[in-house]
Image (cartoon, rainbow, N blue to C red; front, side, top):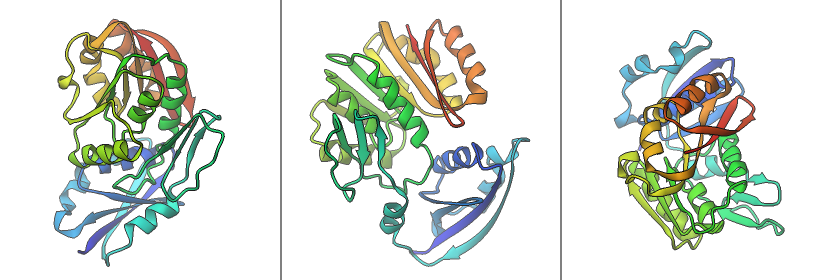
Length: 276
């Protein structure tokens, strides 16, 4: 199987490379390799649509300059590429997120093993870390939790480890759903259900906590639906957006009748914790 490689030069790098990768990941691209000046994105050649590059939103932002070149490449060992780029995520001595090929390190309260289907070099460790930090400040014991846009299901797994009574992991991408189920089995979880879909799968007043590490536009669009799905006093953790978008997000939080209680930043990325 041949692949097409699109090399993007991004200036400035932060936060635009991460935003570009996130947008590409919503399309056909399934693997990424960060470079000093941007990113190389890969897609199976029979799925490559050159015209789609002109419709990307991130390169059209006036605050960034992005150029690209395209070439077809020979098949690569994607597992080897991923293993080289993936590093464990550690949050204090509470949580360590690692791959199977990383050695176990004692002393962490929660050791979580994750094997993504796609290359992990997306730079989203900052949002994952903030979500974990914010989760550690919540009492999840006996809570009904939703991990919305679950991806690898790392947050869902942590929620179960922290005592959640049930966890509903949801993602719109079929590959993410399959990957989430693999990781749940890998970590021996028994109280997590994974479904393909979006916030519409949640009934009214069914969740004590919703974890939403997605992208800005989806968060804003689904804010009212997430509020409706929360129980009174329920917590909503929002991340996946940059610091510059925090005022817009706070406006959306307020418009939905939610109360912001916590704000975190890590590099260019931001998190808002709020309550119903």
